[in-house]
Length: 385
Image (cartoon, rainbow, N blue to C red; front, side):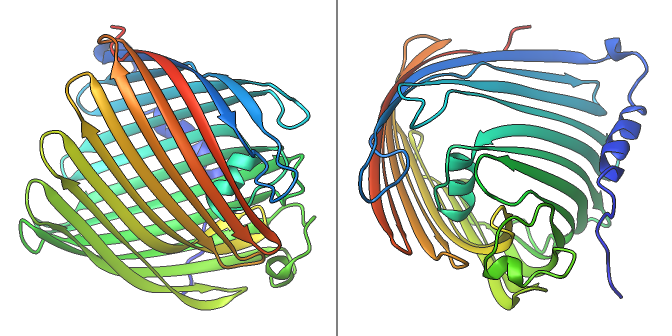
């Protein structure tokens, strides 16, 4: 028996609107909280284009105002997040000025044995940022506009068995980067079994359908797509979550993936969170997965990340993190990024942070490195009322 993802992109937006109609007719019954945040920063990037010759540097001036809003009546919870990146560049021939919004809205309704949620998000980013995150490659300074809609349900079947399932739709449109617009539809279901207070085994199945909307690229991924520009990914994972102590928890999962246009492969992930002491924490993850991309289909991506944070005292903070991504399709690439920061709390609402980043990129015909340094001043007011 085959399971088909949503066929029309309008289904989930309509579901979201209809879902909101079951909210209480009088919003005055809800309790509200709101927050306002505004970091201002200056960054110097030594090689924004990650070129291995003729490197060009640029200075960025950033302001990112953000607001949050939460309303809850004990059963329904509405959450809104909105921000916009206002960025000025010292040289628009190298990198354009940007005004990139990010908007998110969700509704969660709890009931006796679980909860149901709807969420939607709209974001605009530079393709240098969006595709570097996915592929490790650096493209021209175009824009990627993404819209997503998700519906999720979790249900307690018995005292030990929980099911969670969801439907999702994502659409990404590119400009100025020579990438393929695409949409992806996905369905997932997961069963958790509470074996003990510490151990929770699970099995998860995911089905995703990629549809190429522009077909402007010509590469080995695109050439393997169906005649209508589609590809289907099926994913099954088996794993467990383990809470070793109040300070340490980790999870491990392994499984198989099949992409209709590329064949079989293995996937998996492992995560660890460790509270070392009252002042320091460590987190790490390693994964292999497939993800839709503007390169024209699903990409196989390996990722390793670690994060460490240390509070010197209540006002002084240090942190470092590292990330390594390997993409194994079209143009095999290895992208590494190291970050470090020092933060100081001027008051309850004001803080200053200095940070540094070093990154490298190895791909076919490319062997580049760059560094970034910056300083930011932020105002944080999480409870306006």
